[in-house]
Length: 422
RNA sequence: GGAGGUGUGGCAGAGUGGUCGAAUGCACUGGUCUUGAAAACCAGCGUACCGCAAGGUACCGGGGGUUCGAAUCCCUCCGCCUCCGCCA
Image 1 (cartoon, chains in turn green, orange):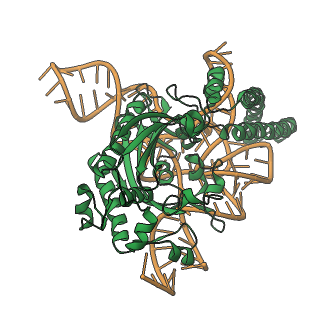
Image 2 (spheres, chains in turn red, brown; image 1 turned 135 degrees about the horizontal axis):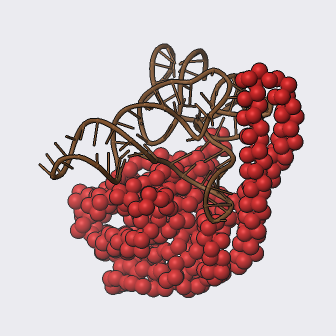
Image 3 (cartoon, rainbow, N blue to C red; image 1 turned 30 degrees about the vertical axis):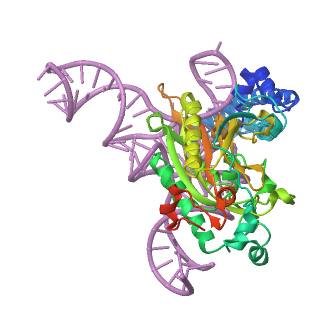
């Protein structure tokens, strides 16, 4: 969530920034600013009224102590008007606050300077690429065929037991999942990230804290009976650890990681591009998260990007990195790098990781601050990235490393699997 | 799930409905003393909002209520603890 101070002090530049996303926020922002002005006026009035009635109440207390009942009663009469007034003012003020909050919580984050304006993925900037596209020759099966032949993944069984998008992994397919998770977690551990195993359901406060609510309400599975949400990403529980906290500047950055299944409703997506592992309702992911000092978050984002590069290179998968244009970025991000792996058999790029700096956008919702050198509380910057999401990695591994009689496992992964071919 | 208890500042821990934003101790910060340190002593030490400032307002788990006035009374939700039940 954008901070009110920011809107007040930098109205024009916020509007310019949001315009890069293709959003004309002038009207919303001016509405917020005018409501906020009203609010401040009313708060002044309310504070004065309360101050007045506090004085009278104290006076009543003194009279009561001295046994002057009549004088006390007389003062009581005076307070009744103040009381009704303050109730009215309180109502008015909370209405104004609520309206400001509602508009504010629907405004997305302002993109960084580096982020270009643009509407869709076509405007994303290619910033890096690695590896050659393999020439598969006649061995160019898509992963769903390989998975079926080698009995690695059973989509039909998942559809029967749960529904489409909830596959079963079997045998070497299951071991591949487990091995990849261990591999990713070990790499994160080596890079200094502390491993967590978080809850897979979160409450509404947490959903709001990282920005899934209210923006992505329909994307999450919701347990109505207990008002809990299945996590769409480990980001939600891992970042909400820091909700309502004040960190010590010395402890920054805080680095953590965790493996979790992720649950997404993905309503309305069907067809060829979501076939096989390309889009699932439940999938596995290792997430890395950092809580960082505002001055250092830009370089931290680069560190995280480098970490993900290392993973993909170890898996010998050709990839490219895109800096998303403003319009293609998520609601909460100030800057995002997407990693895409080339799928040789499908002849398309598959998004396998998204690494973002949210700057103070989440921190403002989370109320996550640190004490700066002046002893003042300041919002931290939050960052996170997938390192990595499994399904499309599995797809790319199966497709890119296939040969005449199976699939060759990249060397780095073999110790985690106990076999070198499928 | 049932019964009882409990929730106060970074921690510990007081708090008769009326100068309680809250005693006290510890921790922390600055100072005095000291060659230096420790000890001792002195002072400071929550957050948010409004205000140029002086200052004001709100906050004692969350929400609501009673009252001129609530940390203190009532209702409700949440967390924690103890006992019982159930259970991987």
